[in-house]
Structure formats: C-alpha cells, structure tokens
Length: 138
Image 1 (cartoon, one colour):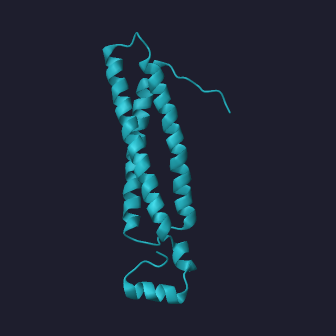
Image 2 (tube, one colour; image 1 turned 60 degrees about the vertical axis):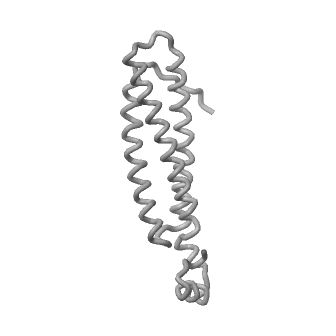
Image 3 (cartoon, one colour; image 1 turned 135 degrees about the horizontal axis):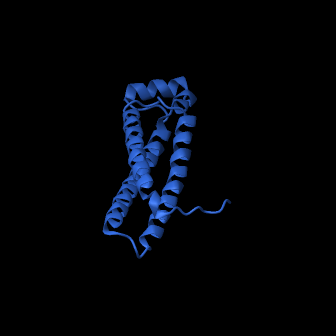
C-alpha cells in the first residue's frame, strides 16, 4: 500500500472547495437514483454493482479526508479563521458521509428490482406479478 500523504494546512481551502463540489455531485446522483426507485427494472445488475463499488470506495476516500481534518485539528497554532474553516470542512464531510450512506441504501433497494431480475422470471411469473400489481422477481 502506498504511503499516506498528509497535506499542509494551506490546502484547507482546496479541501473545502473539493468537498462542496463533491456533495453537489452526490446529491444529484442520489436524486437520479430516487427517480429510479419509481421505475423498477431500469437498471441492470451491473449498474447497481458499479454504484455500490464506487460509493464504497468513496466511503474510504471520505475516511482519508476525515483523518486529514483530524490531523489539522491537532495543530495548536491555528487562527480562529482557519478553525472556522476547518469546522466548515467537518460539516461538509459529515454531510457527505450521510449522502454516501443514503446512496448505498438506495442501491441496495434497487438491486432487488433490476432488469436482470425481470428477465430471469418466467413468463408465468411475470404475468402473475402484473395481474397482482407486484414487481416481477420481488
């Protein structure tokens, strides 16, 4: 495993900007996934697997960012301005952590209603599910 790179406090603004944009992207992706909840069978197993892989990796990246913030918090010579910015970063990281958990939860739910699930059902199962107002494979 590569050696961990610790960043100087001068990179704090970069981290704040990066996590702000990151959260926007995750919120947009979560909205898209929420729409998919209302349209069963629009995603394939591979789509859901990719979402889970990406957001599981992202959770690891969040841990790295959180550890960096913790390291900066240990600095004794931080100005009040930098302490306030560090608080902003921690709040954004907490929000990202929650958004990440929500994406993974929705992905788990969507995994039950993929196109692959519907395609694996027999014609009789599909027909019965439609008549009963259920989702095929559910």
